[in-house]
Image 1 (cartoon, one colour):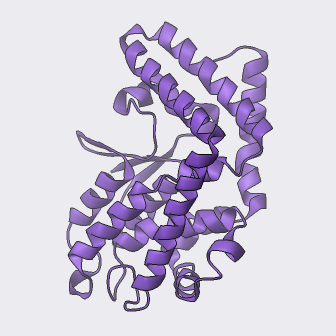
Image 2: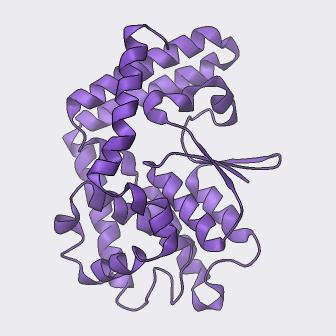
Image 3: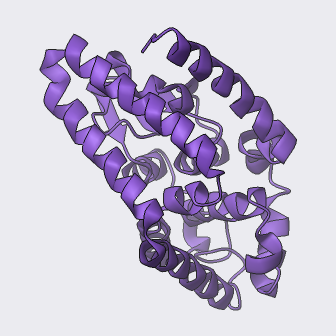
Length: 264
């Protein structure tokens, strides 16, 4: 299996944790959306939405984290065996998938940095449209989706609704963990693989005191999940601001140079 991902992608984390927990062999390929590599024609032909992750297994190509998680869980025995409630697993992965982490994350990024990357990506899309006429319509759709996200980030109401959805998700998790050890029962499942990156993103943005600490069962669960080898391998090594900046700063330099010389 081939996994196209990025270390700062919440949805990529969900899939990687599931792969690690199931101990499946896969080859990771890093695609850097900060450098607009997700807009390169070869990748864009596989996934015209330009989103991460993408999983390839032979001739099968699956985009979006939810169907990828479900596919991974269908290989051999599903995670959790008979110690979990299968219906609850699907309810939780769907519930987590319905919350979009992107506006939540971007709303905590300095506006100047957002404009810097956004302007560059728009120019990349326009350049790709000119060079790849067969993909022009799909690139145009991507341009529209990028504009829609920029508008969402300007909307106080939209951001408030996104945050409320996260609060509801955390409250539901607090209730769930009052009766079960994991999100869907008494063993690790893909529901946990989906939930862990949500909590990791909250901690990365330094919002854990506000959002995790007041929920004692979620807090205890989160501390346990951080001890798992899958978390340490997939997220833990990028979990500090310093480590995150080591990923972002080279991208800033790359984009700055390409913008200067108009290498889109």
